[in-house]
Length: 155
Length: 155
DNA sequence: GTGAATGCAAACTATTTGCAAAGGT
DNA sequence: ACCTTTGCAAATAGTTTGCATTCAC
Image (cartoon, rainbow over all chains, first blue to last red; front, side, top):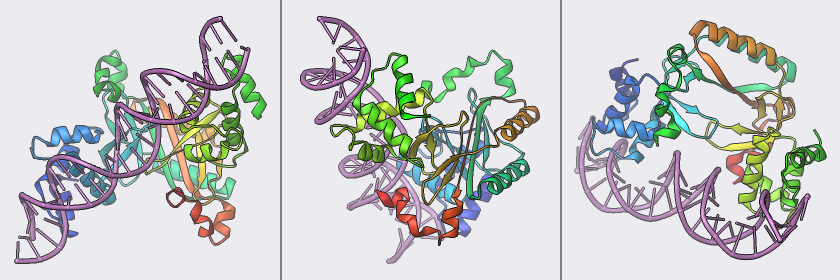
């Protein structure tokens, strides 16, 4: 999904096409992986120097509501945002370089969920599956070269 | 795992057996589902009237480090805690009554992860799988009778 | 021109920390 | 007695909100 397409779709829904929104969308689409709101602010400031953090949050909420991006949850409660290219919500996240892959295997998960419903009698409404590890490049190279990219160290 | 057993194990590791810890462990073990730190404070105050929220958080961190309880993540960023009876981390959570089931299906997930590793070249270090829905009782009864139990409404 | 969106600062929520006092061993 | 743990209050981090101004339509 292109930059233009997202902005266009927003406009069609009656949202205004503003510079802050363009800048945020642009940053998220050109990123290879996930970014924190702070990182998005920093990068998007290039395209919109007056940009404030509140607007970043408001734009993220809008994009997320409209399913153009997805929020990523981490064990320590921290959050990131990445674009949602595929229409399901499973992330494979590289701890080292922040690359995010939305992986295939959807069907397998649907089957798994079906069998859990059968076993337990639950009616399952949502599922959240996130996998964190190292992508092949980072696990080949001596792993933690890019460790400064880790969110805890970045701050 | 009993109340005594957890407290005993903590003591064996050199942690002191205090009234606040007893109260928190007691509340978590007698709960059927997950609780927020605030709820834990409220309930545990019965057994330890001087209890403060900071101590609840410190005790939760301890119990969680020692794997006696597990933190539960929600889409909106809110957190709950529930006991970890089984030694894997998959939760099936009822939106209505807060019941938490740690479900079987471990092997299937391991197999799924293995196949994702093969497909993508990732080395997967952690996985987070949470399912939210309605338990059989809540989906039979007219569903949202207990909606006031929802965390957003509780506050 | 009109209402939506922005930017700032202040508010708010969840959580953590410093420190003196209390309590377990 | 010693050192861990506690409780309070203050600090912090992440996020949201009020409001006057700006901007897209």
